[in-house]
Length: 576
Ligand code: HAS
Ligand code: CU1
Image (cartoon, rainbow, N blue to C red; front, top):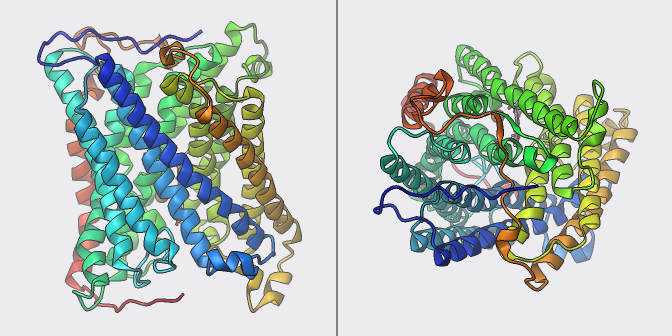
């Protein structure tokens, strides 16, 4: 059984609650964000099997029909990465993390501003799409200079990211308005998680915004004589690491707040949940050098400091692992589950939404473990720039995040539209196929990476085939190729369900599919005065943001200052 997010009566007339017209508009907006996200993902995932086939040794990029649409392996890979990792995530998250706090707080957002933000983000996307599709910005999703794409791509990307900051601003604004109207109250937990994530993203985005606005746009317009690749990479990873938590934490919101209810149980502890998000807020950003262990001209001391901070930011994920497992166990035991692990069978495995998310979690056990390997300076040289890395991120962002969002869609679309989920059985099948495909892909790619196969390489058409043939990688290549087929089937199943659901007539009152909010075994209470020390200490999110900013300046200042002092003007290159 599920309940709606409690409608909190607002105590101040200056803070209007959600009336039915605003709620309708907000639901429509959320639907637009989610559908745009999943359309981008649809194109992105259709390109996925092409990448998997490449790593299976099959070069499909020579097929004349494909050649008409996609000029090269690298254009295909760029589109795949940008659409799936950047566009899909950002659109879905922007809708999801505006809708949830607005509902949770029962505060009316300025809908004109909210729609303006959506349109700005979409305009940014369409602008960036033109050079991407015209093979004019084949710079991969990390767009490292001196690879130089069309300025239109950088401008579109900047507008898109700026729009996400507008959503962040709006949510923080709503929360502050609520705080002013409710002095002494504990921020409700769904809002707490959303605001913490948005605040983290604001600190995180500073690096990328600086890189793109100050360096890449003027350079690609020909206004500067060159660009410093090392500084650009450093600013990129300032954002590039925490962006992965910007993708993960919205899934965690569901794992903490909604999944327990969907499984028939309760959230473990609200205090612990808040602690995890407070830690993500403070420690997500100052770790970017773990992507740059191989970069020259960065002192080892700073790389080591970033490494330890990376291990620290794994702690809230470990807290999440135990807390999520506890919620699931609570649910299963409530339904008569027994035994040390036997209770797992009592989870409602027939529910596609729950199953998607639990499978996403299972994949993340391996994704997280691989992340710790990547972060260790001793292991990094073995895996860095090999096929291991795409193996890692397909069971983090490709599964923990994406499969969770897919599962969320199974209740969110009926909740937003009043339409019924088309074929829950097909939905269930799609999530198992996705999980199976991603696990196979990850196995194949991690394995190939350990054998030394590079990432981002058209290995199926490499001149030095003999070198690959001597690597003894026939089996992992086969697994990778098969995974492309499995994931293709998963996508067809999933999109059949999604599109048929969206195109079906409205049958129910949307609110009859409520937001599945979980109760907590250990709640935080409503008033700060009576709350535990943990809840009180984690409540001041703005102060925590300030601490995050100070920490970032401390661990990035000494890294960036010498780069500024020795700024290199490197001319751009087009390798495609
Ligand atoms: Fe990563 C590279 C380190 C997490 C994504 N990562 C990447 C790239 C991407 C990415 C996209 O240190 C490639 C970037 C590029 O193109 O170059 N990553 C980490 C670490 C973590 C981590 C330490 N990564 C993520 C997440 C991502 C993501 C999350 C996306 C959403 N990653 C790295 C490093 C590199 C890297 C290096 C650079 C590599 C290189 O050489 O270039 C940690 O945050 C992971 C902590 C996670 C855990 C797991 C917790 C488990 C949970 C599930 C519990 C399950 C339950 C299920 C309860 C400790 C929460 C129970 C089941 C039942 C049935 C009951
Ligand atoms: Cu990272």
